[in-house]
Each structure stands twice: as C-alpha cells, then as structure tokens.
Length: 423
Ligand code: GLU
Image (cartoon, rainbow, N blue to C red; front, top):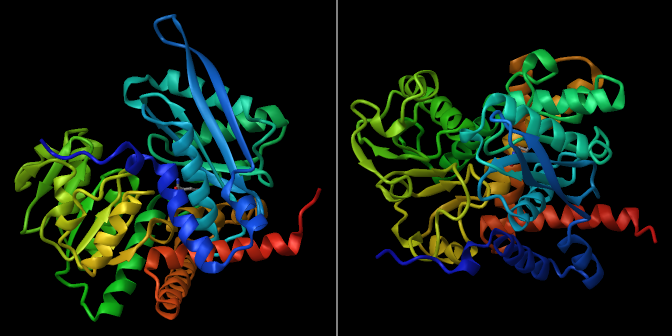
C-alpha cells in the first residue's frame, strides 16, 4: 500500500499559509500588515442554477475569492473541476497576489472556481453555467476590479462567454474584463503559449546558472494541458529532449525522446489518450513520471503531486513548477536537501498572467502588438523576476521559494503602507 500524505499536507491553503508564515517572519512583517495580507479581502460563494440538456435543473456551487487589490485590480483564473473547494480557491487567489508581485505587474490576486466536471458536460451546459456565474458576479468583476482568465478546465471559449455576458450586463463591449480570450475578441498574440514559454525561460536561466547546455537536456513534464503541452513543444524546438510526458490518464517515459507535435496531434486533434500514443515507451502512472531519471522535471498538472512521502524520489537537477502548488510545504525541505534547483510556481508559471497583463493593456489601448513584441516583453519580465528571486535567495540564504514569497510580500507590504488603511 502506498503511504498517503496526511489530510493537512494535502490542504493547499495550509500549504500557502505555511510558506507565507515563514516568509513573513523572515521579513519581520509587522503584526497588522501580516494580518492584512494573510486574509482575503472578499470571498463569494454562489449557487448557480443551470438547466441541463435532459431538461433537469442542477445547482452548481461556485466561488470567487478576491485576495488583494493593494497593487491593482484582482487577477486570476476560473477553474472548472470536480474537486474545487473554497480552501483551494482561497489558496490559489493568495498565490495570484504573490505571483503578480514577483513579476512586478500591477495586479492583486483573485481566483474563481466551480465544482463541476467539464468533461461530462455539453457545450451548451458549460455556456449556461459560465454565463450565469458571470452574471451573478457582474458587479464584482471589471477591468479595474477583478479580471478573470482561464485555469484548469476552462479556456478561450469560456473567456469569450465571460466577456460577452459581462458586456451585455454593462451595456458596452468590455474586452478588458477578462484575459485569455480568442485573438478575434481582443485576446493577445502569444497568450496561449505564454505559461509554457515562461516555464522555458526559467529553465533556460536555471541551466545557464548551473552551467548546463540546453541541447540534450532531458525533460520530464507532468500535465499535457495548455501549460505542459506548450512547454514541451517550445522546449523541444529550443533543443531540450522531452523524455517523459503525462496527462490525467497516465504517463509515458521514453529515453529516446518524443516528437512533441505528433503527440499534440494525437491528443488534441485525434482526441486519443496520451498513454496509448504509439511508440511512447514505458507506461506508468502520471505521478510516477515525475520520479524518472531526467535533468529537468516540470510538474504542470495539479496540486500536491510531490509530497513528504515521495519527494526523495525526485531525480532531476532542476524542478520548474508549471502548475500551482504541485509541491507540498513538507516536501520543500526534502527537495532542498537533495540540492534540486527549484523554480517555485509563483515564478515558474507566471508567464501566463504576465501575458494576461499585456492583453489587458492592449485591450485598454485598443492597439495590438506583434507576437514578437509580446514574447520580447515576456522574456524581459521573466528574466528580471528570475534574477530578483535568485539574487534574493543567495543574499538572504533562503531557498528560491521562500525568496520568491519574500520578494512578493515585501512589494505588496510596501504598497500597502504607502496607501495606508482607510478606516
Ligand atoms: N490561471 C493562470 C494562473 O494561475 C493565469 C491567470 C491569469 O492570467 O490571470 O496563473
């Protein structure tokens, strides 16, 4: 029987809190500011009635948590998944605040989620669910209030419905209320690839720091959604060797490397299970793929994949977190002791929200940039953020994750002190 992590270890909000506590203490955050930043500013629970295709009426539970608007409007995705909970959305909203601060973009943090299984719902049901959720939140969202984006189980089409519903309620076409939209509707070039590109930029920087070359560097990626598949594709084109892949159904490990565009075609166009990809090498669970021999491991699926129980099995020299919260805080010390160079989620996957920021800027200007401009600016933001975190870690003798939290919390705390408390 595999040993399962404790429920406490699996609670993502406790994971987010634990790192916050350490970073806040090391920063010597004063008590009032500490309390202010620890708690979200607003939590909304919604019960969303939706008529199903079979004529029945179902009521779904959804959330939107606004953690902070200290540095700008709330920003963060909407997740559709069966295991969404208020604790999870709260943790994800808090991480968005730190993520936006690490890359120094002028947003606070927010997150939304609906408990549902989008794979078992029709397009019409998903549209009605999205529209009713957005309509209920119409007074809380807005380009200057709170700006959603895609996350697990949602995508460009979902964002188009959010944009349309909000626009209908406000009687004006408001593209900047949501990011990750289709390009035809005010989306940004390069947004689809942005999180994967950000992962690659961080890996490039880590390699340079460790004196390693890209060519032939062996990469394992868990997750084959927007983040994992784009990271795999871009990194292979750049010279990395992708030897392990996994999605929700299972994993594959092939020392000879994958032809990533062919795998994307198999999974996305032909809609076939990744684990049945012909010539894919050794089949294993999605979890096990993380612990195979490789140089770089990229957990880009969901939370709590690397825990106290399995962290010692990580074989990579570099870990770049494409997902939010894939490593529990109990696992951090084990990963550190192994000397793995860690690029924490709030830095590693920040490419997505960075290009979301560019999308918001372009929508508000009504002037759209070339893809090369988007990518150039993304490179600049990610490289600066990487350097800031790594330098901070070295200077203050903390690991990269705590350094990222400290850089972020310090920026938010400074802004908060400047604004003062309106009471
Ligand atoms: N859901 C993504 C994240 O967790 C993107 C958020 C955004 O673009 O606002 O970073």
